[in-house]
Image (cartoon, rainbow, N blue to C red; front, side, top):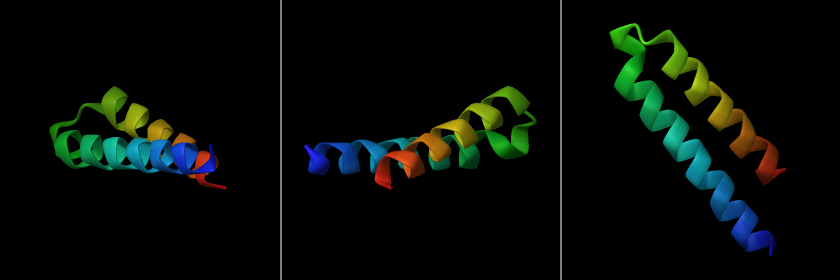
Length: 47
């Protein structure tokens, strides 16, 4: 069960980083905010 949670956390971090790389330079402020939230959720699941 811990392994699944860890994988989910890594997946969320990956999704968040991908969104940041895709949209940070385009001025999509809402999507950057969502990406930051995904990264934080992933980090919380890893703890």
